[in-house]
Image (cartoon, rainbow, N blue to C red; front, side, top):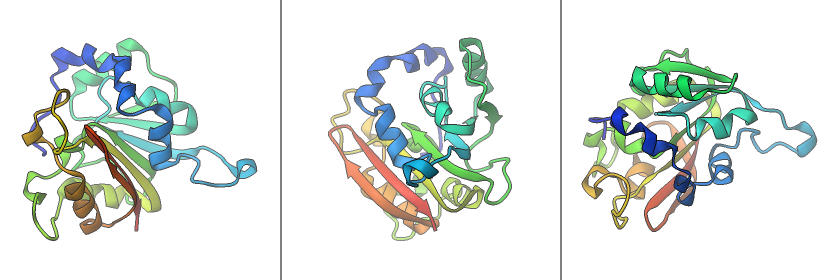
Amino acid sequence: MGFHTYDVDRADGLEDDSRFRYLSTDELLALFDPRDGRADDEREPLGAVADLGSGTGFYTDEVAPYVDRVYAVDAQSEMHDYYREKGAPDAVEFVTAGIADLPFADGDLDGAFSTMTYHEFADVAARGEDAPEDAALAELARVLRPGARLGIADWTRNGEGREGPPREERFALADAVGALEANGFAVEYADERRETFVVRARRS
């Protein structure tokens, strides 16, 4: 909802393997398909992808072996400091920026993903509108090349709320799908589960 970030003082909590209960590595990779669905003998890593709200690099580490470069994008330089101290793969490049103001040229990225951060950067004004304009999603559409995929996993507003942010700070799947479609993305797959939702979208 674009108004807060994760408390750096609680960063250790992001390094908890129990996070895989809500999103496994295989599921994340399937959401934005770093090898872009090509035949096995033709598959090569994508050139550059961005982890949107990378935090401590918990999921960045999982993606790094499958791409040439992964930009760890976070608005908080303190999160980058934590990640550097933990140790980042050689493929990781740190970018301190908000999602609505990314330092990439048009079409620079071959893919992007967001793990449990959509509610932090999506525009709160987008909720409930027929054709929401969202500065962050419009910026993602700008920096992703046509045909590139965006994978999103986040806490759903329709969840039980036992973990993650309060439900009033979340979006439902329908909100996310509507905002993506209104901002230059074609949604290929979407699913709302007990506590989370996932979306795979392609830059039109």
